Amino acid sequence: MPGHLEGVRVLDLTIWRPGPYATQLLAEQGADVLKVEPPGGDPMRSMPDLFDILGAGKRSIVLDLKQDEDRARCLELAADADVFVESYRPGVADRLGMGHGAVSARNPRIVYASISGFGAVGPLAGRPGHDVNYLAQSGTLRPRGGPPVHPTIPVSDLAGGVAGAFAITTAFLGALRHGRGERVDVSVADVLATWVGPVGPVEMVGVDAPLRGLPGYGTFTTADGGCIALGIMNEDHFWAGLCRALGLGDCEHLDHAERTRRVGELNERIGDVLAGLTGTEALERLAAHDVPVSPVLDRDGMLAHPHFRERGTVVTTDDGHIASGPLGRFEDRPGRPPHGAPAVGADDATWLPRPG
Image (cartoon, rainbow, N blue to C red; front, side, top):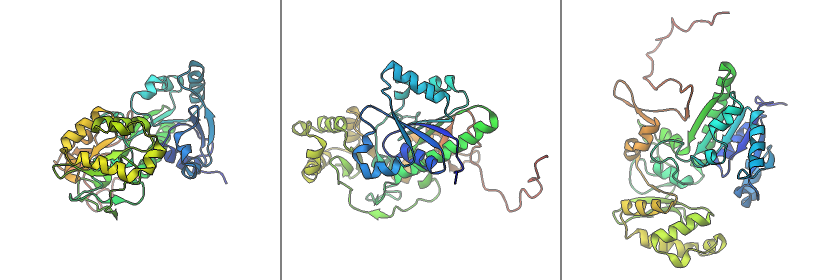
């Protein structure tokens, strides 16, 4: 049986989990998803079991967007698509000639969606990260303070994918009604921040262990009793930056396989160095080397953070209350700002049938 999105064409330039999960949800509903992969394929193919799930029902084409001919081909495909989805760090799509301006110039009705860790704008835009970093920055690991409690599933990645699919379908419906496309900016950290929320902190159900199955991935204690989250997966360049930042030069050139074999030893060494630095010192040193690192905030720290304030993830309403913003930022049709709940029956006389 055809799905609800049968006939909708989605050009998918996403990698890792949030973006591919969003487009997989669209594919499940019948969308024709064409996955654009770089030469050598999506790095997630190194995890075949997971890639098989995230790639189910999609089609694939290989394009090297650093080549003029392949960039032109990608724009041709975008001209005939309904949705364009990318998950690069902010600025990368523009450098590849696939930014919103270039794509919408070819297809003004297209929904252009960016799904990233910290969003396309804001003080943290462009900061690298993975699941644990978004959990840490949003206050999800320790909403009430105390030691971080880790989930047993990749909550950030899955939340970002669901929110991405929701934002895309919302914008697509708007494009159908209004006759013009939309620019959608989905931040994984934003989604979690709205879940932690301005009203009552949630409690994470998980494990107290710091999730260090990979070297340089998990939470680490600093000298001032705080915690930071490192989010290195199999990226050699992030690992090299970590080693340079922490003075572990003898480990800088270890490949992923060797690092994994020595995970206990390496994480112990990382932990020892970080235990001698304050949280601020660790964050500044690691960020200077472009390492995926985040403070492990509590709920109050998240609510006060300028990144979430600037993006509108956390807002102050006209009556002075703190409220959550939308799951995704819509450039042309941002929607209504949050406001108080209605009184019982407040709209009994105003909810009328539409004309015709």
